[in-house]
Image (tube, rainbow, N blue to C red; front, top):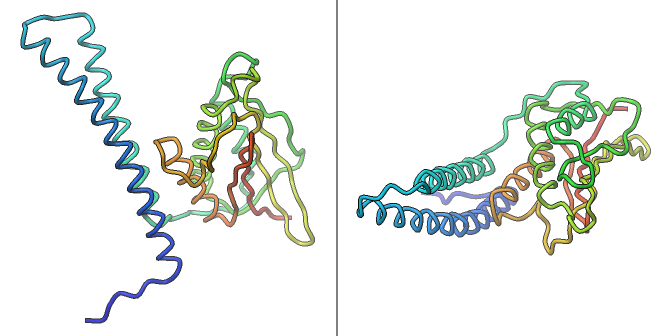
Length: 226
């Protein structure tokens, strides 16, 4: 039997999936240890025949932990599978981003909301899968809010702009106001939020774009029509 030969792209994908598996297993192990602790506490109370008010709270923690674990596994499975994009022409990135931003409370300097501070007047249109792209931008925005720099006491600020170099046009989305972190959240699998950000980066790349991080900023680039 001939050995299975992998392309460089396949090899890179398998290596990324392997790294993701190690991190997610570690995270799930911590979650399961917490679930075991809550379950043990509940069992001891029930064995004594007591019905304390905090029993419902404990059960809710169990359910929430299981939901988190299931969600992380689902995201990992999505990451490991090939994406099937249903691209449509003339999809406006700006409209998608405004719709995503509207799902968060408005930022007022005290709440962890988002505001769109800069935007281009013309539409930023291209060939995209609107649902999949919206899911990716939602995941990035959710993570950005959680990474908000609370010391500056400001909301996440989103800017949208167009960049034109010769015949290439690019839509650029930036999330400003993040606290300092020592790694790239688009290429990390340490926890559910960053697993979803890594999946979002993969979706962006499949659309011909890129996702990157620098201190205090998340940035997405997407190719658009002229």
